[in-house]
Image 1 (spheres, rainbow, N blue to C red):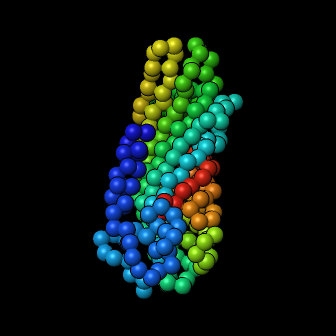
Image 2 (image 1 turned 30 degrees about the vertical axis):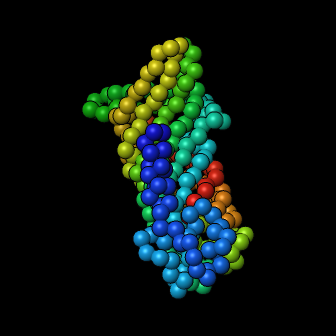
Image 3 (image 1 turned 120 degrees about the horizontal axis):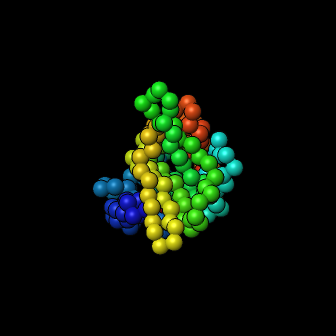
Length: 246
């Protein structure tokens, strides 16, 4: 959480400079959207297409699908993404374009189960299993997966200045850089790192659809969290809102 907030702060500070303050472009008087007219280190060029949604954050309910074994997820199971995107319109008047970028994804699944590891007979390998937790009461129980990601989107949007509708189907691939389970019993805190058969490469489709700067967001992970064939077959899924800052 601290790492992702630090990234958010650095991006906002970096891109708060380079704003245009004068000109005849219709956006200059009203500036729709925070930092909408950021143009980098050079002045805004009216001959070029206007760029949108180059920095966005997603806040979502996250869950896992598959072999749940009667384990349920809490409603306050919340994760987030931070994405820096290069918006590439096909032309100044085109309703279509593409975007590609770099992102950080944080999944935090709060649940009432536990992950256990089983040594497979005759094999130097372990499998991972999700099952209901039956021990002493845990008042924090969550499993975290953090990713560095490369998102890609097809971008369709209306031409009007205000009330601009946007439809962004996409795809992203990510590499898991951190994972752990965390729980508390009484005043004692416990963490379990590095599951033995973890699948670190993940990818799947995304969708953002909305108006102006606010979107509905969804992601479906096409890969499983664990690689051993005897492990619980679990996939991540998320649904929430996205904000396009500039």
